[in-house]
Length: 68
Image (cartoon, rainbow, N blue to C red; front, side, top):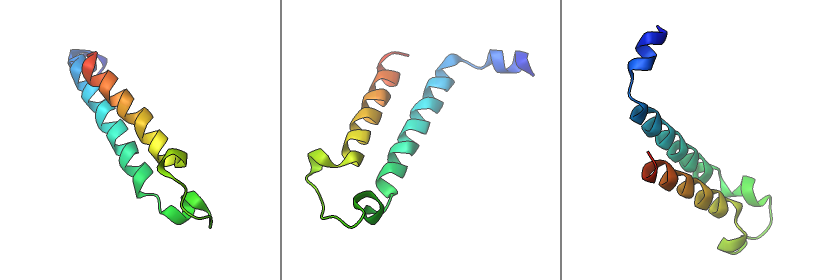
């Protein structure tokens, strides 16, 4: 079993990591706004935690795709 896993190219691990990060990004934006703001008015985009989570996740995706 371990030998079979070692035969898989490392590039597939990069693709799996990128897909995982994009999945997390989708989940971040699928959270309803009422859970994010807890009754307060909608803040500007710069103060939205989902925006900054997206920036960090997209940076990670960029790093994984740029540095294989």
